[in-house]
Length: 109
Image 1 (cartoon, one colour):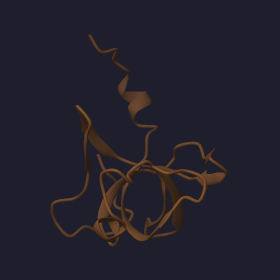
Image 2 (tube, rainbow, N blue to C red):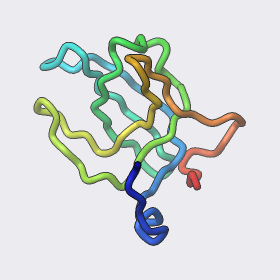
Image 3 (spheres, rainbow, N blue to C red):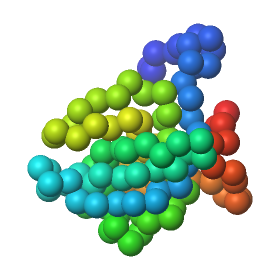
């Protein structure tokens, strides 16, 4: 059974709509991309292990859901300032996005 968290804890997480503006290969990792994501009020860099699932062309301009207030981390020498959310099961990965045209920075609830 999965552990539960109080609603008050859930409210601390900030998920927003972002748009991928730039994607390039990580110079120190075979499976990672360096991705610039526009969140409306600012652009952040995310280091993401998406190379085996998406091409650079597939990712460019895609609207995605971003975990905005995740503590920044240094991954293989590069700063990652958030996380792009994806579904994963049995080695298959699909990015979470939005169904309709949605403003960048819109909160996900």
